[in-house]
Length: 177
Ligand SMILES: [Zn+2]
Ligand SMILES: [Zn+2]
Image 1 (cartoon, rainbow, N blue to C red):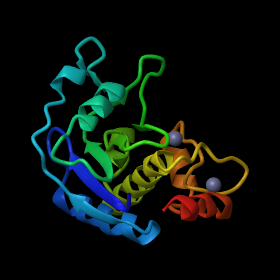
Image 2 (cartoon, helix red, strand yellow):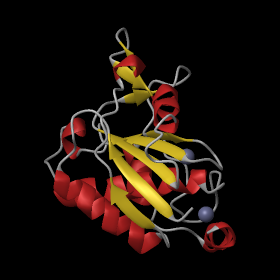
Image 3 (cartoon, rainbow, N blue to C red):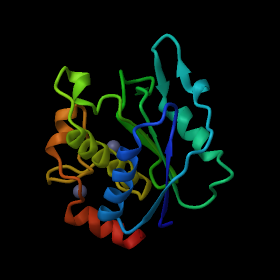
Image 4 (cartoon, rainbow, N blue to C red):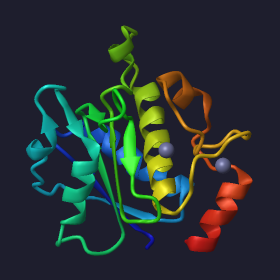
């Protein structure tokens, strides 16, 4: 329950980002993270008309990983993700279950025509990862308080929220972890 496997999907994101992510998650959550470079083919989740990957299908692929039968599986991909009802998603997770996936595609400053910033990218990556993991521990979107579980429609929403949980969300986490 306390183990998290970080799984790079597709072209590998920069290693420094993954290592920073591992340490960042371990600072926010009482868990141990390992980076697993498993050969997972996500091409069947690619939608050629949308030029995006269907995140729900990626979650299903992750769940079939028989090598990793314990703990949470957190996919991180540089490719853009979607679910059919939305133009894109930053990430998706199974609430109260093992798998989550998120994309760095829209977390880069360059995506918005702004100068590249590794620091900003690392912070957004951490917030997105912790948010999706929060869902796997049963947390839903949190409103009215600054919290990493605040929902994010735009990257500005990610920038506004803290990388950590508010007190009620943290109390829930402590009861399940
Ligand atoms: Zn969410
Ligand atoms: Zn909260």
